[in-house]
Amino acid sequence: MAADLALLLTAAAMLALRAMGLAVAGALGPRHWLVQWAAAVSQATLAAFVALAVVAPVGALAGVPLGARLAGLGAGLLAWRLLRGRLLPGLLAGLAALVVVRAGLG
Image 1 (cartoon, rainbow, N blue to C red):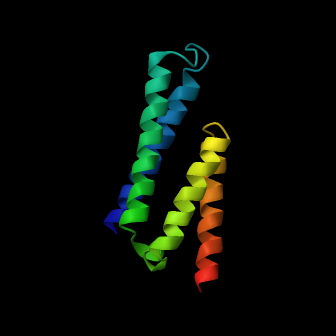
Image 2: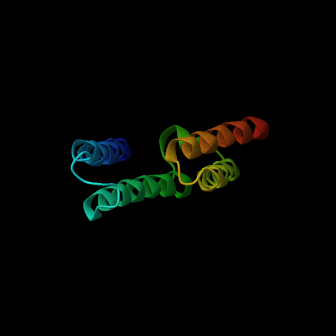
């Protein structure tokens, strides 16, 4: 229950920061310190959640072997790097790798 609340609050914080970024996007350029700070905090929050999901999973993810979680993390990081820091494709690649490895492990 506490992990679900933490996930909900993390997602809300990330979305709020992104929404604030969109609201001021017309007034501030992408290199403005406030926009860069908001992007950094959002990405750090997501990274913290992913790290917790890999190291100390709860719920449905707790039944997934560590090897599958690490494969998903590696694939996600590789996709993120190859796609020049695009988060959504990196997350989707990591999730796909986790599902494929999990299915392979039985």
